[in-house]
Length: 72
Image (cartoon, rainbow, N blue to C red; front, top):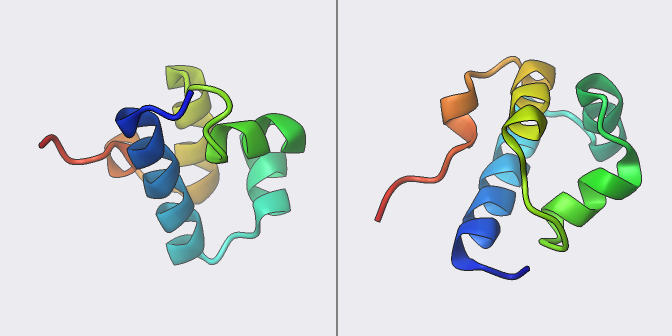
């Protein structure tokens, strides 16, 4: 992967996770995304789907739009 958008998405999700004070494993559990899959997403080896983002947003109790990077 390694696209600019993938990098921005991973950074945005990681920033929201840290801001919420949620551990990686807790995010995995709450979002229903297996730890290995979540690691692949955050390390840009896989691309986020809308389903992934919805699960993460729900787990962090934020709107999905919070996880989307700003447009250039």
